[in-house]
Image 1 (cartoon, one colour):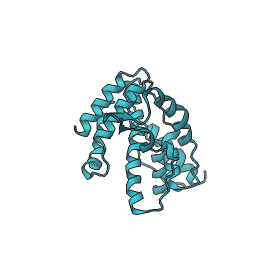
Image 2 (cartoon, rainbow, N blue to C red):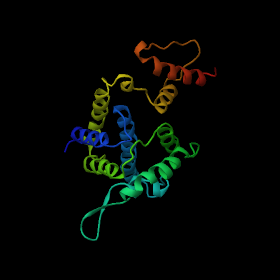
Image 3 (cartoon, rainbow, N blue to C red):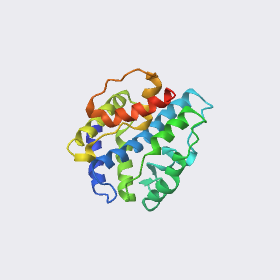
Image 4 (spheres, one colour):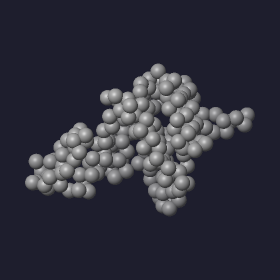
Length: 216
């Protein structure tokens, strides 16, 4: 199954969940799950290159520790976290831990915290949540270059699906990205930015942080 087909399957699963309302929430839900999945596979690479690598995530909070399936004694796949427990774990343990990471420890801590600052778990069904994990485990292999290249297309597909969603179809650039843009551009007083009026909300966010960086 290719990635685009997988994403459509995941969207169909989320539509059955009472907690997910609209494409905007489906995008938000999928974003943080994809982030943890991809970050975990990147960590596998870093661990191979650096034998003393230490994850910024508590061991229990790493994707490999709670997501996916393992082979049971009977030869069947068994979820690492039971469907009856996984929503409680996400809401009461995972999110609080990641939202409260100390950003002063490292750049990784800062990025992870910024990703989860405004993120939410909208899903209420543990069974459907595990179905989404199963689809991601099946299709996302970040060690594969082709998969990496196709992830950008997935993002574009999701945004395209949201175009007709009215107000819910608006897309606001995450704060972490605008912060990174400000850091790279390094705006100074009296400089002007050229922005499309359609991007007013994101432009204001960029300017707000730019003014702060410039000492205003």
